[in-house]
Amino acid sequence: VREPRNLTGRGSSGEGCGRRERGRGRGGQGCPVDGLVTRRRLRELGYDDVAIARARRRGELVLLRRGVYAPGPLPEERPARLRLDAAAGVLAQPAGAVVSHEVAALLHGLPLLRPPQEAAVTLPRSVRTPLRAGELRVHAAGLPRWHVTTVDGIPVTSPARTVVDLARWLGTRPGLVTADAALRAGAATAAQLVGVLVDCRGWPGMRMARRVVDFAHGAA
Image 1: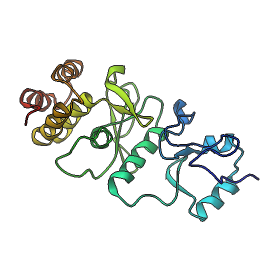
Image 2: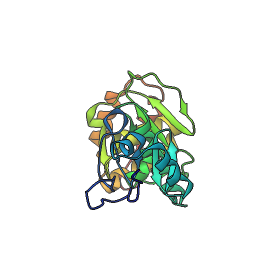
Image 3: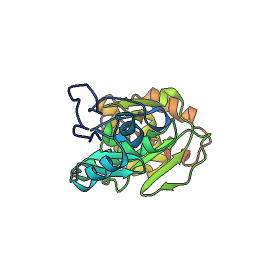
């Protein structure tokens, strides 16, 4: 039985799941960041349940979500842990899932009024899903392709969509903190924010989102 000796990089045969590499996990996704690897991918590489269990006992693999592993030990910093948790959540969910809300802001380098306490992903509206999957918050909403981008190989809502989502979810003041920063950094433009408002009209929380977009200013 071949054991997973180099899950975070690429061995002599080029196998494994390295940083920024994208593969084929559940829903057509694979290893988006920091060596995350699915059980399906491990089996494709020839690792059986015994080898996986042994790696977990030795702390070389840590189960983040059902069927999704990270190389151990996990980072102690909360933002880094949430980043891993969100990326693992994308792999564990059906196809089309993207990192969204607070962790999306972190991935884009945008500030938040308060430190995030949990990771969130958004699934296309057509997917029926519970509000939570363990400790992961799951949203179901429309995801036009121009609302989605990638950061370090992780599918994530665009900066403009992230601002609108945060305003809808957290309210006016937290939304303004992120919106002002996005405009100031050039991560989003006023036109892009208005475009997302148009795409999301009629959704819950849009009154707060419109208020945030109206008052957001890059010079703030």
